[in-house]
Image (tube, rainbow over all chains, first blue to last red; front, side, top):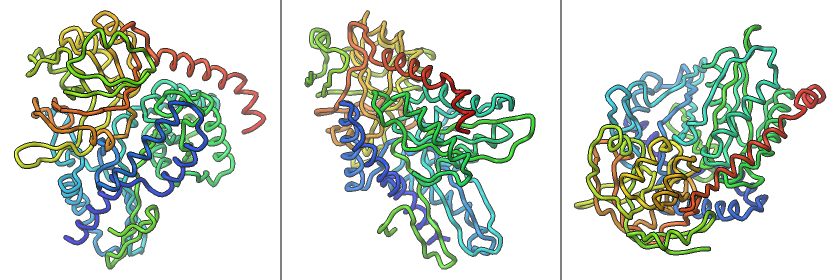
Length: 293
Length: 201
């Protein structure tokens, strides 16, 4: 258990101080396409910041979020019974060691707990893998600014994809300026607000540049991408042709009477990392090539 | 125009600055965000220090205890718009001269900037390590019981920037133009959407 806690806390540190390979590549591509005066200046500062964070081993952004884990755990993973406890212990350890910003506030006491652990936090979404002996853990550190964009709504099905696109553009044009663009846009489609919202968050975990395997969903991603780029929000909202890292749509089948839409954004410093931990506690870090914990 | 400004900030220096100018700051900078604004304006507590002629920073840092004091690990701006409903009164009652954050602020803050000669400036969001490099030392902290992000961190800064002026002392607001432009583009993007979707999706 101690070894697992150490491993997880080092993983948390990596996610806080280093951007994943796909995000870095996407930012580089966007920066070479940006011609606006402010946009170019902002990309240059962003890359200085990314480099400096890594050199000094400190968080890229001061807002290290409320830790949110998406865990796929095999029923034969030897640490399945202590995994939740280990994640909590690693959160406390990383908060002190890195350090992370203590961000967890108990709403009724209006009290910051100081260690990033609180009622139901860190948040964990579980998925069980029958007979597998490993765990794949995704950690997403979303700051407050980018979380404030979040929205969800249940539309009557007659609104169709037109209604979906209108809702997305309303939300993004209203709050997107503050979500630290170029942001990643996740759109969830389902039956109810909470399932659509969760799918929109899961959409943010997909590799940048990936498309939904359903060609029609992929086309919707493309259409939304074109429309959002057309707003010319630009880096930090100051205008420009690069506004998004990508648009990812995730969906479930829906009830015939509802068409629920969820929206989440991930800021340019999109800190979501993946670790695959095997039964002997060896691990892989698919999004951080060459990194050893 | 690019300019270095020292604190305490003088009105005549501020009045020469326009929306879109870039400035760098030398001197004292104090963090103040949601909870500090509310404690002062809604709960009626006196601020533990005078902010007159000073800049405030909408920011909640990551800090580290070092022998006898604190050091700033990472400190970037937070969304200024959250403070919109309180900023007019905050500027009027404190005499603060510069509000630094990210994203724009609204018409009430722009009114206060015009009336009381203050500006709003943005520091590019997420560039928190670059910002921390410009903090020379932590002079003190107040209201730490609000938690690390919400406390008033009193900082000595050097060449703190780039700060892009988004509201000037004339009340011009860069983000008014941005929002107008985005909304008119949204209107264009949604035009003929039915037709476009029936042919594409």
